[in-house]
Image (cartoon, rainbow, N blue to C red; front, top):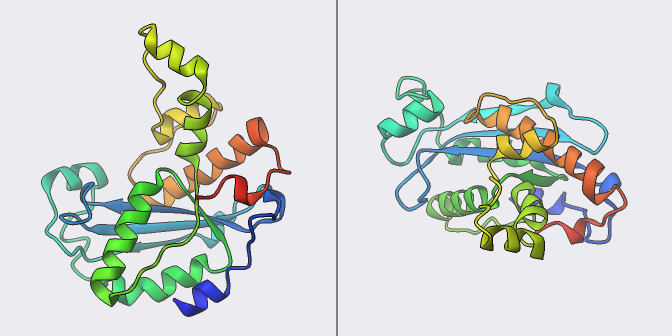
Length: 211
């Protein structure tokens, strides 16, 4: 973990177009890190011009808690698939090395941040919290927080979905099969590139977006 943090040279004032990025997706057996487990992690390095899909990495991981039927239906990852999978403690060095020096971009940071923090604290007794950009939050700034969005809800118009595939559709991006870590990471990278090109601009500063 020390090497991971030493490699992080990105500052809040850095323009996005200069920032090395990595899309991160975590698949879990549920939504509560106290009762559910990480079963897959996918990362895809990219920047605003290119997605380095040939450098993608994905790990299947042995769950801390038993698989639940709903999880198997969603991810199509079974106990047999995970029989020889390593524990996160064994794979963590490779995961951090694949992300080192890059700013993570996720869709819905509450999952990635909460599950990583819980899993690492359980195994190592240490905290692993780092800045990340959340494409869901960027969509919420446009579609849920402005006054026009609140008025639409007051008038019974509902609110737009912030699910990954629905956000992508608003930019004309194709649909991908969901709940596959490396494919969802790719989908997140493409969405972020579209958000920057359409709304935010390459000159935006990293510190304006990360959290």
